[in-house]
Length: 399
Image (tube, rainbow, N blue to C red; front, side):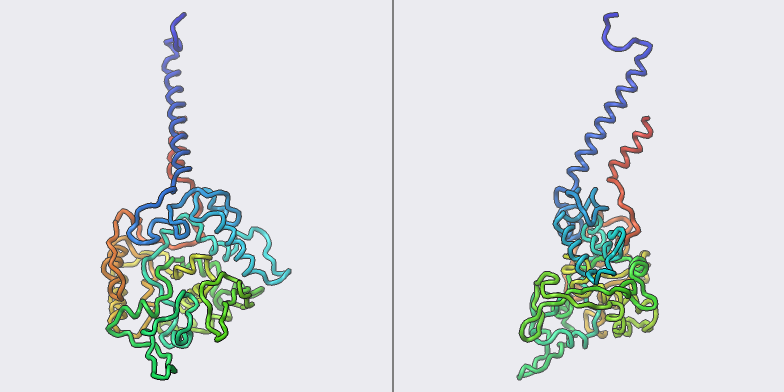
């Protein structure tokens, strides 16, 4: 009667319950440590933004409470300050009158989903390490970027080497980049990397019939107006809406420019053409995801993997851009419109980037998802960390 512990007949029951409780406490403790501590350090990466968030330069982590992008409160790539700026920019672009005030859950609207991309913990997975070239023809570059003018998405004037400058300084013709691939990057590339967007999601969210971005037809948008100096040149590095706004119907404003479709070899009224023009519109300055749009171009891709034939065909066309064999074509330079596989991503970084003067990058296979590239969409639901999922499964087995 004085022996410690349970009676012998109940020993197995006591041992089983005690073991379960100890295991439960240990698992909960580890889960809390991992959940609270995950993402507090930067992950090693082969190129910028490969595994760490663009805004924080850390792996995704549990943020302090987010209001606008609240679906990422468990794990995010943004701090609350950026969440607040997302909301502010969202309100400004939709400030189109009392009767046009959005009702219901604003966070489900297309622009809200688009603006919260910078908080998505999967943001590093959407990055394609390929320079982005604005959807302009070579002549359009010359028309839009006057001599010593400031391309609105660059922080410095175009270099003199980008122009065939006559003695009196009157010519603003872009120089021929044949046999000088470095000119492609110096003169034409507007952003150093890309963020991949699901073509299907963009079509569903913003609409392309009867014309692109028709979701904004009723109330239009208040787009940021650039700051101009006395000569009319754009002043770089100014925050959105510092110099006012312009009321535009983006679908009508951008829909008629189909010159890029001719370069791509698609018919003006086809779905492929409308997708290209939509991509061009989403890449207009101060229109896309705050902060992201200053550093990345948005590339619309299909939700499927590239075949080897598709990839190899693109590499051949890309090489012809680099050596000047073909006319300048951003629809080629911006990469395939499908999702590259892991092997293709590795080859692209190592062997394709140098074709236009980029640096060769040796990619660690383990840093690339087994499925290859991912495209942003609103289809995925935010899930709990993998450890917590495993914990729930183990609890179900134990109890």
